[in-house]
Amino acid sequence: MLSIDVFRISTRSFKNNRLRTLLTVLGISIGIGTIFFLVSLGYGLQKLILENIATQDSLLALDVTQNSEAIDLNKESITSIKEISEITDIYPLVSQDSQISGNGLTSAAKINIVNPRFLSLEGIAVDKGKIFKDSENDKMIISLAALQLLDISKDDFADNEITIRLAKNPPKQNNQTVSAEETPAGENVVAESTPIEYVNKTYKISGVVDDISNAYIYVPDSSVSEITFNTYDKLKVRVNSTTNLEPARARIIEKGFFVSSVSETVDQAKQIFSIAQIVLALFGVVALVVSAIGMFNTMTIALLERTQEIGIMKTIGASSYDIWRMFLTESMIIGFFGGFFGVVMGFLLSSLVNYGMNFLAGMFGGIQANLFARPVWFIAFIMIFSTVVGVITGIYPARRAARLNALEALRYK
Figure 1: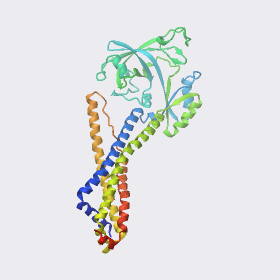
Figure 2: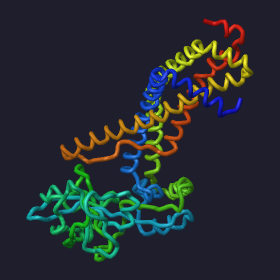
Figure 3: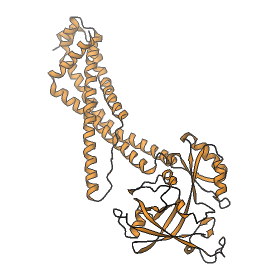
């Protein structure tokens, strides 16, 4: 029997039992749709969180800090680390707790003096505005918490200027930069006899980071050329490829520094989400198993109803293999369309839920986001998986149908 004939006979049975076929496909669709909805939710949350944790640049970066008080992070440290062949760039960070003034108010915030490339490797993203460039010496990036201290709206910051009071020669305590206000009385401080000199720098706001927990500001290092930095709080080290992260990390540790990276956090997050996706998928598999049992029951009933038909087909020349193919084709078609409509159902449901969540977020001033992610390979996998489930479910009824004796099948009532 030709394959096209097998297909025609298989689909003819669907026309004769439309309601039963529709309900069977619907059952498979519910199971597949549940899996699609839950797993795409897991992928969406993973994508959303990982995008907030890291950027493409930050995955190539290592954070180098002091491992002990005996070793400073200074220019000699940068020279030493640059000798490592896997490292392409090094950008230092210097922090001060300083006084800031703007909009007629004065407050305190942590000032981070950096090269603009540091921000990219750090994964800093602004909610409003943009990251300042190398040539923009009069621009700064401020956190929402620091902005609120000065009673400036994040939607109307362009015309505001902020003045920062920076120490040109901040005192050193335990190899860390501290402000004059933080220096405890009676403590031994490096160059304690040298009076602290201050310089006031005025900046325009270039961008706002959506962080209401910490008050901080980033300013370009080119804007404070009059300040000499003897030590650094942190080095941002860029590696030439992700495969060289571990070798570079090991060599920096050998030099006596402490090294951490965003990639470690990302790897841990991926492991957690992989487990979460498996758990979510298992809930959907339960629904799919129930649907598969219903499909098995449908195929078994179809076998009983068509026993005489099978006997007639065998009598006129159909082989057992043809009968086996016919039943297996039916189950495969049911599985395929169950997967197709399941994907459509899951897509529509996830879109509806995402729209509802974003609508509520907009009403209450929250951040709108896409909670679901549907990779193309995942959609293809779901379709193939559903078809395979249909085939597996139909194997036993197909085998029973193929083994029927033609004469006994003709006598069956």
